[in-house]
Amino acid sequence: MSFSKMTKTLAFGGLISFLMGLPLLQAKEMNFPAADFAKAKALLCTPEHVESLKAIGKTCNRESFSGQAEDLNGDGKVEWLLYGPSGECGAHGNCPLTLLKKEGQKWTLLSSEPCTEDGCLTWANGLYSEVLKSSHNGYRDLLMASDSGSFFWVKEVFEWNGKQYRRNNGATTFFLYDSDKDKLVQVTKERRDQCSKEGKQCL
Image (cartoon, rainbow, N blue to C red):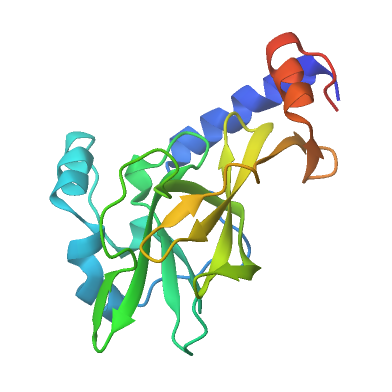
């Protein structure tokens, strides 16, 4: 695919994503049950989210989140990875990410303390993200994708350190999106950067 064709498709795809204002989802995404959302709403619709959404005329509700239910620690109970609210997602579907676990009848944040440093898991794109079979400190690793321009993707591995999911800096992979085959093609960082900056070494 030529770079000019890639650029036109990129612009169109970005516009559609922006107009929709919704996260891009993988096939196994699920809706967080209404009863559970009611119990977890204070964790998902924080005052900061509510105020930010109010400024653009949107609200924080169950429909503004997409999610994935996975048993991350093998205890037979699912944890939830929730992307949203959609009004705060980027034009390419990268969204705030909240991880919840259930304790008794209550939902709580998976992380026992806030993580604000570089390498924390706070944003991701549900499309192409997945839970891995490998694990650290009792929790399965997460392979989280992010879209930096429709054709330029990054996947990062996050590992549980006992308190938070932190990025494994040595496990980042880079991809170009092949629109003809509708799939990501793994490339080196150098090739990805050259395609992005110079329009060379693209697919």
